[in-house]
Image (cartoon, rainbow, N blue to C red; front, side, top):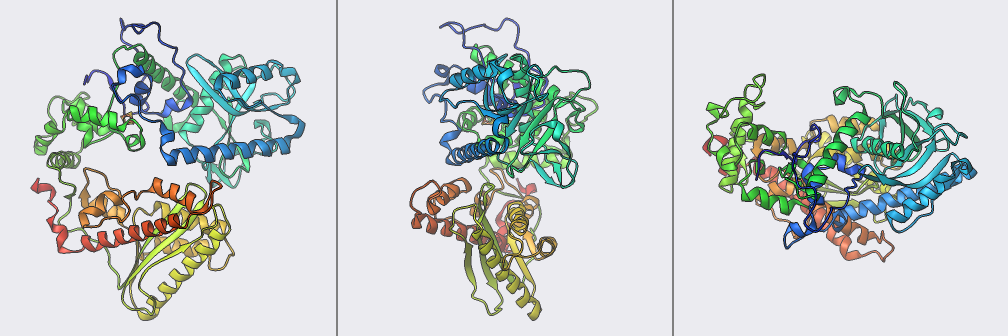
Length: 600
Ligand code: SF4
């Protein structure tokens, strides 16, 4: 693998330029022009490369199945399509004659033709046009859920793009610029005193992409220095339109505006794709990053990384880039370093003496490399891990379906006798999400938890409740309180916050992070086997559980499947038993069998 080209990690790289003299075409003729969608600007550069390599160059396996082969991704796409369709129907109802929708068509080409035909007669159009596939141009393809005329009634004023997404785009707070759903125009927007913007990079870059496409088609409002360039977003709650000025400079992007960031990224990804398409030297090599976990190309990249013993197999992201910058390109070279002597070679930047590596980082990177080479699953960072234990203990795990709700709270009660049956119990709703019945099951869970807490307090016993990675549980604890306030058993926000902040609620994930280096990941399914735990179901996993759930409740129109309900209950019970096994192992003598950092 060449180390002279940029690696896949990192989104903010300066635009890459194809090397001079690169071959312009394939032996079989001129390559097809590259057209990128907006997602390419937030995608791994190597993935953009692989997606544009001529298929015959990929070897016998060819390209991997697309994202849609992943049932979780396919479900999320179907949910997003339903959400967009619901919004279009809502706008048709709210806007009446002020709304027109482009006729749907099976292919992007037909949709673009239909949109061109509609937009050609701008004088006759209302001020909001839905479902617009924009004409592909300048290396771009894409569609907007709606276009909004910049100056209502003025056929020559151009259009602002409006997109519909299925995630949250605001948080409680103030300052977001919003307009009512029935007035989707920036002129109708004002500062919102209940919401602040939750900026999602891929959303704002998609708006910039659409604005550039509109400009290429002569459909964008003129860009004037200092004037805003608007894009609108409707999120999961679908109750307002949030307006974003794409020309405003952003503190988090070195003062660059969204449009400037977008232009740099698009130029970079276009160069990567065109080099791949024309068989020029690759402008992006594989390097392990967070995105690899869910990338359909992982087996291709993993094979390439293993073939050269690439250092990113153990130290991913920017850390791998920094190591390569100091000449450490393989796991073997990293494992052979003496951390006390620092990194080899002169620092490329004298201002960053050790390539940005702090000494503890290097000690751990070297230990990870040694553990990887010797197939050691965990390395102890501390002499003895500590986990607060209680007289009474509960292990908790929640199951949710995307943004739709949390349908199952599982709890394993153990420890001193408090007059309640020890063991696992599930608080569940099998009404398809979203459903008010979720509030009933959450209320029952909280009533039980409140009772356990009260019984412990009466007896002077210490209660501890454990989960693994509290973000998901806390999110649905808070979300359930908000959505089901007033239902039987549902606590107040203050009661939930008091519990989350209390010593009784313990997240095991940071304990594992602080106690171990994990060459193969820190997920519960990676770590618990070292404590001796095995899941009953060989397919146990978050994405699969979502598929089981859909069958369990007949979410796609089929009959509810009781076998899948049982499977989910076993899966959830296993998850809480895994946390029980993990934490009891963490506080046992057996954990000392895990090699210490200094012993490798
Ligand atoms: S597996 Fe990782 S490096 Fe390879 S294309 Fe996917 S995200 Fe990029």
